Image 1 (cartoon, helix red, strand yellow):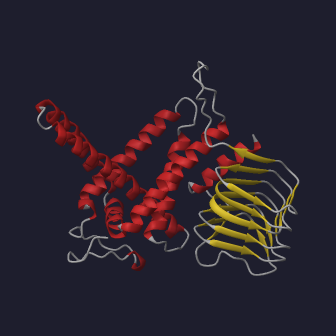
Image 2: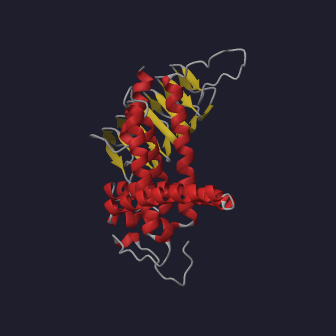
Length: 337
């Protein structure tokens, strides 16, 4: 129960309810050598290094980051790793929980608590000291034995791990898309930020119109092959819209941290948090599925509407840049990507 609660708290932190956490932004996450840092530290898409004599009087959270804890450095509480790499040659007084990524324990590493690994790798020196238990959690629990009449129930940790891995996959695809075509993603995100209500209305009209059009194509029989292509185009638009909403969320988070992230980083982080939070809401008993369905519908409407309003990110759509670091190439003579 302690580990499950720790994971849930970490997911809430990634959703933006960071409370009194000390955020390590993109400019200077690494403390000065020999310093004592009070409070928890949460690092996103960056590198942090604790040198000998450094003490973190709190917990350490890593998302898409790299951390190094040298010999003589100490983390007083727990370490939470999401898709990150951490190399430990110092001391960790609490637990270590990793969802994706890698944990490297050197010769002088000392961990007082437990180590829980969910879809991550652990490299441990024979001289490293781990006083607690090391637990390897499977991402999913699936019973493929046909003789068993019903599948075994999935544990809470298994459900959370499965949702986390799915969210990482979606976020990875979003980051790749933004890396290949950054300018269209920026244009669509700006269209969403400028007129969200109109985007929602446009998205609703597009969905209704698409359903009617596909039904007419199927009824005509001769246009059934075209209907399949229309369905494919619709789902591509849906995913593109989801990634664009994730980019806009990542952009806002970057502003909150006073950091200018590349479109791929903003899209990956925003999509990860968006997908994680909506999926986690579905775990709420009774009303969770309803809230999750409404949230998914809202994101789909916003995403599809923004994609259509921005003309699929075409250079013909000319939004006004929101800040100097958010420059968008609007030249119609240049490639959109």
